[in-house]
Length: 177
Image 1 (tube, rainbow, N blue to C red):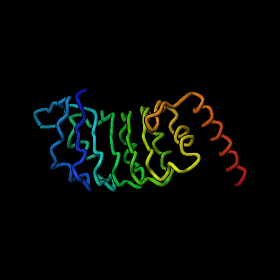
Image 2: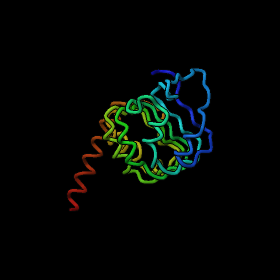
Image 3: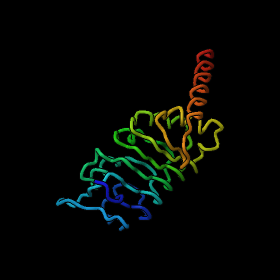
Image 4: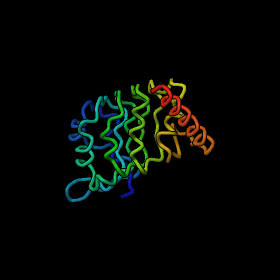
């Protein structure tokens, strides 16, 4: 299960169902297939396409992978995504998620990814949310198990600061109500 990823990058895919007819790019680490022509791996690369939504993400993962529930690495970077879809939270074993270079503009949508108990690495740079002053702290607070964010290690000091800022923000919101 540890070959290279199923690589569907640079395929000009607009809808995830379009990927179903594509042949994955070959890589240095070839991916083995089973008798049903599904791939024996736990990573999927859909970067550098024109994907605007993730409506058929689960079906796409099932289409390509022998064990879709074991998807651990998903690359959706450099697409045209504007939201962090709740469907990503159904990928319970996800450990690495690349969303950089999209058009995600609502920082609070990162919070929903907190459901992913194994997520330890995320990229979100190159999205409009990055200009928010609280960007890094908010993400680290929402995803307390992160080890890496935007290809940079998350330090223990950042974790402490993110928790402190979150507590003070929560208190100020409580006082307003």
